[in-house]
Picture 1 (cartoon, protein in one colour):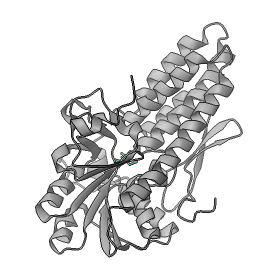
Picture 2 (cartoon, helix red, strand yellow; picture 1 turned 180 degrees about the vertical axis):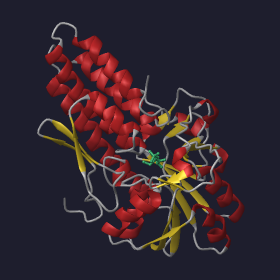
Picture 3 (spheres, protein in one colour; picture 1 turned 45 degrees about the vertical axis):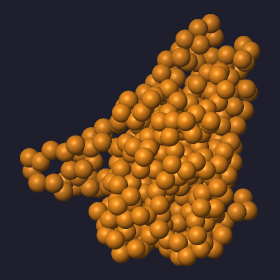
Amino acid sequence: MEDRHDSIRAIRWEEGRLCLLDQRRLPFQEDYLYLDDAAGVAAAIRDMVVRGAPAIGITAAFAVVLAARQRQAQAPGDWRALLDEDIRLLAAARPTAVNLNWALQRMQACLAGAGADPGAALLEEAYRIHTEDVAANHCMGDHGAGLIQPGDAVLTHCNTGSLATGGYGTALGVIRSAWKAGKLTGVYAGETRPWLQGARLTAWELARDRIPATLITDSAAAFLMQRQGVQWVIVGADRVTANGDVINKIGTYNLAINCRHHGVGFMVAAPRSTLDFSLASGQAVVIEERGADEILSLGGERIAAPGASAWNPAFDVTPAELVDYLVTEAGVIEAPDRQKLAALRPPA
Ligand code: MRU
């Protein structure tokens, strides 16, 4: 790969197996897991070996290739029913990111159109989903960077980079493109409790790209804005509903409110695979709630007082009216709403 800013691939197909960079071990260990069945991949998605909306969609697509091969070998007469079960298992691995279902639906459509031995067609489709995602990210990078003025500084949240996608990234792709264009004077990353995707993953990606980054605690964002430290907050999305509501990593809603109060631009970068026209608004989205232990403990050590409990929603809903720009591979939408989004709807 020639682009120094696009050198990381966390999902690979290697000699008939799916190879995932184990994101739980980053930034200190670069371990790879090799998987060859759907149950293993579903567990990897659930346990955050791989995370990020487009990345889990791509991973699930390759899992269908593995599952079809395994089920055909196990039950030549009845493998399609078993494969359907595998697909249901994958779809249930994490509930909020729509890309997971979107990719599985594409694989099912491919399966329906393929003959008795669909292995090659499925693998081709999984590769296509992966490469299309990287291409979409580069387009979003260009579109989003076009909005940024020379001298601007940005804050981002969670990890939206190569690790969260097929490569390059959504919001982090915009930041990479703006950095390459020489526009940015600073990049801030929120640490993103409780999984610390910002501190562990975004900081790791930016360091590899030699883009200087400054970490802040999630609670420092409003003060950074008050001190005029940033002109933009740029985030990704796990789902954007038909009215433009944005479902993304917990804390995104706080940032959007703070942006509006301080006159800081709020930009969401998401490929069209993240748009969900089946849901009218963000209130209808199932928000994943993860274990209390992720908040009560850190690195396996309890940090909260004995007897304390915790509520741990992994995502929140930012109302469309707080979004200044929605950037997709198709271009930029200012102040997204139902009508503007409808123009991006694929033909029925
Ligand atoms: O819980 P995670 O780490 O899967 O959450 C990821 C995010 O919220 C990202 O911001 C999102 O997937 C969009 S960017 C690819």
